[in-house]
Length: 306
Ligand SMILES: *[C@@H]1O[C@H](CO)[C@@H](O)[C@H](O)[C@H]1NC(C)=O
Ligand SMILES: [Zn+2]
Image 1 (spheres, rainbow, N blue to C red):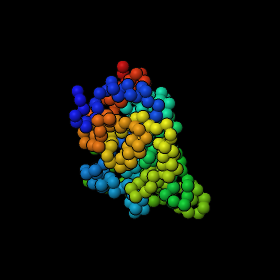
Image 2: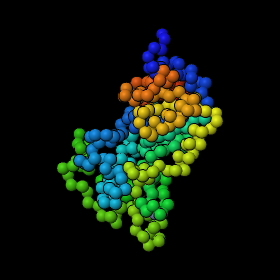
Image 3: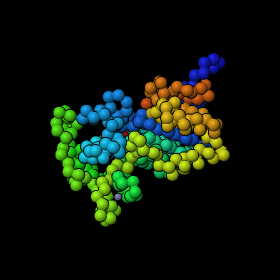
Image 4: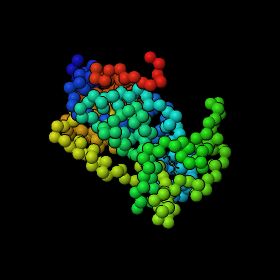
């Protein structure tokens, strides 16, 4: 059939052939990758937590004003992420990283599920940080504790990690119940600052609104993109290709010759694609193992019956 319309290709076999002959693959992952793991995204309207707009808690100003409230929000998200399991999409990407010669995966997700699926850290960049990193709130201080999986993080934040019966709302999530009272001194403090006689708090090691992405990491990514060999495929998974920051990377990848493949059940995510590109209207957990078949084989997913 002639491609009269500039619609992206949706043929899985054609994508598999292209991937087989690809040396350099770039992936950009968003919240949709972790959707099948059951993690809430807090994006857009209705992203409420205890009647707070979740996005308004994700700022340095909110932390300065009420560190206990912001810590409770993140302590709960840490707890949720630890309860969640990587899905077949995370495993398929981790497996592709093992098989593809030059693969770079950028993720906007802070939940650590890609790492837990065994994704090689050399081929994974967490654009928005890691919810399990704990670092000093003082910008002058470079104290950071990578990947602290303690849950609760400290005794004062235990209300965010409590067990509750499945048919009941967790008291912490019920906005009609008072917020647990936590004293500032009971929140985690920076040991480096303490030694210097200061009392700086620790904070989650993620990029909040109004903060810049790590410049060393961005330089590394730019250098990878700029390599003379070009890019064969760019996968845009669970995020929209035409929205920043994905848009910047898709433009850059296109300039290096890449064909873009968008994987997203939301059809509006294919905006800006051409007939050279691919679009798969599906959840990442369902379709990534199929798309990578022939390269990765059938990945084994721990805890899932055959
Ligand atoms: C995680 O951080 C908390 C607060 O700083 C600390 O008390 C705890 O020992 C850390 N856990 C690990 C495993 O390092
Ligand atoms: Zn400090």
